[in-house]
Length: 612
Image (cartoon, rainbow, N blue to C red; front, side, top):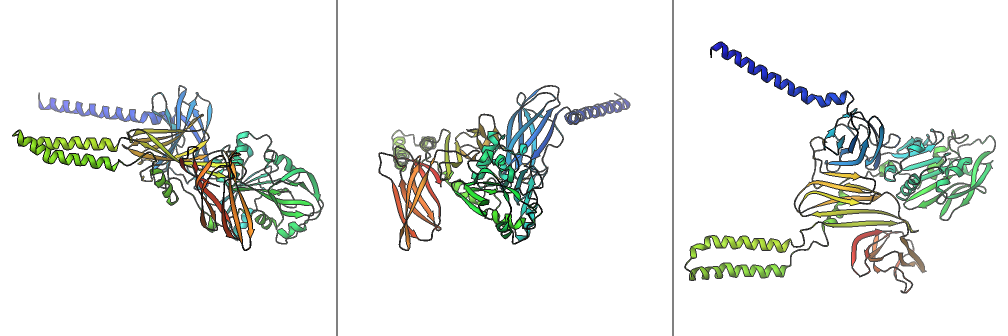
C-alpha cells in the first residue's frame, strides 16, 4: 500500500470511530430526551401538612403520579432520604400501579427534616424489568423544616387564632398553620408536625373512622386538641364527644365577661350585646379552667399523654377576634402544653445518644449463648494429648516421623472445624429479638412501640414483616457520607396494603440488623395499675395492684426521682389473693411511672418494658 493509501485508510478509521462515539452519545441521551418530552412519569410531590414539616417528627409525603409512557406500569415508588443521625440513606417504598394518563395519588410516612437535591430523591422501579422509569419534573424534594411549636387550625375562618404568635414575645416560638379538614392526615404519625390541633366551627361528624382514630391516637401520644366553636360546638365535637371535657347540651347568651377579662390580663372586652356561647356539663376527669357564673368558659381533660382543651366561644368571631387580651387568655388556657423555645427538644431519627442503651439490649439475644466452656476445655485437652505425645509416639513406632509435617497441620484444621461447629451450633438459623414498650393510659388504652433485632447467619438480603398498622424505621450499622448520590441504598421500609416490611440489603455474614416500630393506633383492653395512698403521719403508704392483662416481673415504682423495686406483680385473678406491693413515701411525692417486664404463664420472662 502506498503512503497516500495508508493515509486514506487512517482517515476512514478515525471517521468510523467518530461516528461510533457520536451514536453512543446519542443513545446515552435518548432516555433523558424521552423523559423531557413527556414519555416518563410526571411527578408532583407535597410534603408536610399545610406546607409545614416538623424537624425530628414523622410527616406525610403525598405524591401524584401520571404515567405518560406507552404502556401501563406496575412497580414501586421509592423515596430515599439521608438520615441526619448517621448520614446514611433510608428508603421508603409503596407499591404502585399506574395506568396510562390517569393521575394516581400515593402516600408515604417519612422523617421530617430539611430537604434539598443532595439529601433525597424519588424513583419508580418497574416490577417486570427492575428498571427505573424516568421521572419528569423534580425527582427530589426541596423545603425547610421547623422546630417551632406548630398550631394546626381546622376552621371555617382560616384566620382563626392568627394572634397566637404575639406570645413569641414571651419566650415562645409559635407558628399557626391553617389547614382544610379534608387535607388532615389519616395517620397519627403524620400528625406529628403539629403540637396543637384546633377545631373551630367545623363539622367532624362526617370524618372517616381513620381520621378520627388518628387524631385520638395523636392526642394520646402527647398532642393537645382544642375544641371550640361557640354555637357550633356540638357539631365540632361530634366525633370526639366521649373524650372532650364538656358534653354539649345547648347554647346561652354571655352578657358578662368579668372572668374572661381577668384571664386576659385585665384588657377591656366590649361585648356590645349578648354573645352566644356553648353550654354543657363537665365529663368525668375534666377540670374547669374558667367560669363565667354558671357557664363553663374553658375546661381541660387529660387523655393519655396529651390533653383536650374546651372553649365555649368562637375565637374567630367578634368581640373575641380583635380583643387585645386574646393572647394572654389563650396562654393561660394552654399553659399546660406551651413550652418555651429554650426548653424545646428536637428528636432525631436513627442512632442517637438516647438509643444507645436500647441498641445494647437488642444485641443481647436471649437465644444466643456462648459455647459451653467445659466442653471446649475437654476437647482442647484431648487435642493436646493427641498432637503432642500421641502423634509423636505413633510416628516414632512406625518410623515415619517426617509425616508430622502434614499430620499435625491436618489435625489443627480438623480441630478448628470441630471448635467452630460447637461454637456456631445455635447460630446457624435466623433469629429475632424484640424490646416492646406499652404505655398505659390508666383506662385500659395503651400506646405501643417496639425495637426489633434480626440475626442473619448467612447475610445477603434480610426481610422482616410486621402488621399493617405500624410505622417502621430500619436502622443501619454503617455511617454514610451525607450525600444521597454517594451512599448505598441498604435499607428500605416497604408499605403494602396488608403489611409493612423492613428490608436490609448487602448484610454481612452473621450480622444483626435492627428496626424501630411505632403503632399508628392506640390499643385497648390492657387494664391498668391501681395505686392507693394511705396517710401515716408525715408519710404515706403507697399500695400498687396489678390489674393489667399480664403478670409482671422486675416491676418498679418511679417516684420523686427514685426507683422502688416491686419485684413480681402477678395479674389479679378471682382465685388468687390480691397481689400488692407497698412502699412508704414522704407526704409530698410524684409518681412518674411503673416499669416492668412481662412474665409468661410458665414463669419465664419476656424481655421488655411496660411503662405506665
